Length: 211
Image (cartoon, rainbow, N blue to C red; front, side, top):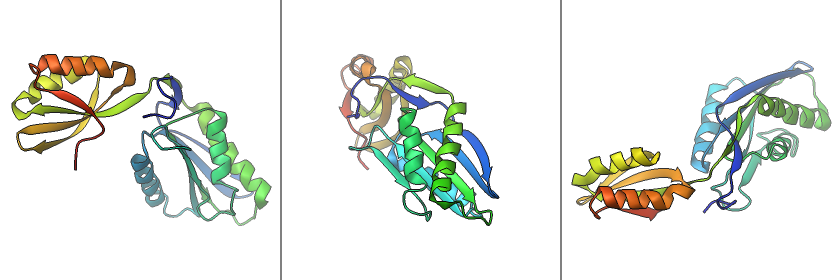
């Protein structure tokens, strides 16, 4: 279940970047939508590889799918509390969820001190947030649609009609397990549509398909 029940929440629609320079150091901020921890960890690894020449790649996330507190941050080698925590504070102040914030720093040869680092990391991410397309979003849930193999066409038509997104698919015996993401308020309707489309042979279960 999500941390905020069925209430709408604020998130960003697309990735946005912002940049500042402080005493020779370059700070590049990226804020992007992020649905879960797995995606966040994959994106952090991507950014570390993409900015391999950087001195630090710091991050913070707020994820509704995480167990409480649903938040995490990393200073990535900067003095403790000078990067990740200020970045997380910027996300909290904007009341954003399901987001990942990245700040990449290239050291410019002059130490900024704790106060300077805190201002730089929080400030550049705040600039990216200001430039982002922020929207109120309905919470979505992950479920698995299970249907006989010969009913997969009917399933996909029902998912399209319900406005649901679907991803990985697995076959176990004569059944297909289809990962589905749907607005939480539409879950009951989706279940009914799949049941009707498959002549009662399909069903929706909570969680993802087995590995």
